[in-house]
Image (cartoon, rainbow, N blue to C red; front, side, top):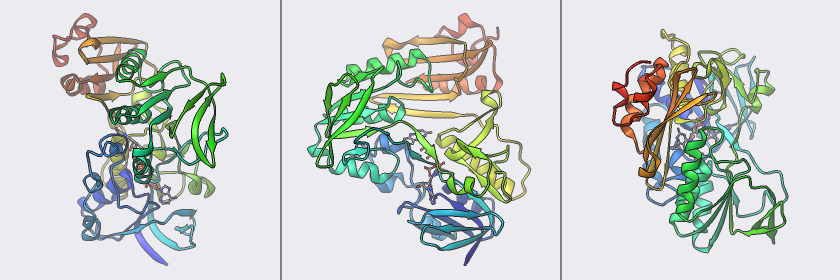
Length: 410
Ligand code: FAD
C-alpha cells in the first residue's frame, strides 16, 4: 500500500492550494493527491465564462502547468475516486480497491451538481456545468444547437446565458423563485441582472414552474412547463446548486450533513482528517458565526492554506477570512465582498442606468457586504469597511461622488 504523509482527496481548487502551500512552507514529507477527473487541477470559474466562450484554451486555465506537480514531488493519482475512508487504519480505498495510507488526510472533494428529479432529467443534451468535460460536451455540439433552456438563475446559469446568447443561441432562462440570484444578492442586483439579460435577448422567466424534460430517442427536445406549454430545447443546462461530496467521510463517522463539519482550523470530527473548500461546513464570522458552506475560490484557497498551516504546527487563528467572489456577464464585472445574508438595509451607490454602481448591505447599521458592478474602486475601498463592520454616515454612503474610503462614520 502506498503511504503519504499528507494525502489530499480532490484535485480541484482547494486540493491544489493545499499541495502548493505545503511545499511553499517547506514541507519535506510525501504528498499524494487523488482526483477523479483526468486533468490536473484547473480553474473552475472560466467553465461558465471565457473557457465556455472559446476565449481561453484549457492549458490557460490550469492552476499550475502540468509539470509543476512532478517537480514539487506531489504524486498525482488522477482518474481515481475514493469510495471509502478508514479513519482508524488511516487509509482510503478507491473504487477499484486500491488502498492509500496517510498520516494526515485533507478532504477537498467539492460537490456534485444537484440533478433534477423529473422525467427526462438524464436525457442526452441535459448538462450541468461543473467539470471541463461538461463544457466540452456542450461545445462539441454547439453548431447543432439553436434553442437552449437554462434551469436555475444563480451565477452559473446567468453566466452560461450570457455566453450562449452572445454566441447567437436562443436562450430561455427559468428561475423558480421570484427573482434571480435570490440566495446570494438583494433585489436591486437581481432586478438589474434580469433587465440586462432581457436586453441581450435572453427570455428570462422568474416564478417559472417546469414539469419535465421532453425527449425523443433519449435526447432532450424541450422543457415542458407546469401549464403544459413546451419550450423547444436542443440543450438544457441545469444550474440548481451542488450536493457536497462527503459520503465516504460521513460513512466513516464524521459529523456533518450538508457538508462535513469542521472546526475553526478545518478539522473534521475524525482524527487527522481535515476538510476544505465547497464541502466544508464551517462557522463563519461574517454571518455571526452561523455554520455555512461557501462555494468560492476564496474559501477553497483560504481554508486550504489554514489547514496546511495547522498541520505544520504554525501559529494560526481560527478561520476568519474575508469572503469575496466575482461574476462576469456580458461586459459587466461583478465583484462582491462580505456576505449579505441577513441584511436589513441596502444603499445604492451610483446609478444602475450607467451600469456602474454598488449595492451596500447593512445589518443593524453595520456594513456587512458590497456588490460592485463595474465599480472596482468601491470593491477595493469597501473591503476594509466589511472587515471592520463600519457604521457609516448614510447620506455620504449614498453619494457615489464620495470615495468609500472617505465616507465618515455615523
Ligand atoms: P472542486 O474545485 O470542485 O474540486 C473537487 C475535486 O474533487 C473535483 O475534481 C472532483 O471531481 C473531485 N472529487 C470529488 N469526489 C471525489 C472522490 N471521492 N475521490 C476523488 N476525487 C473526488 N467561484 C468563485 O469564487 N468565482 C467564480 O466566478 C466562480 N465561478 C464558477 C463557475 C462554475 C461553472 C463553477 C462550477 C464554479 C464556480 N465557482 C466560482 C466556484 C468555485 O469553482 C468552487 O468554489 C471551487 O472550485 C471549490 O473548490 P474545491 O476544491 O472545494 O472543489
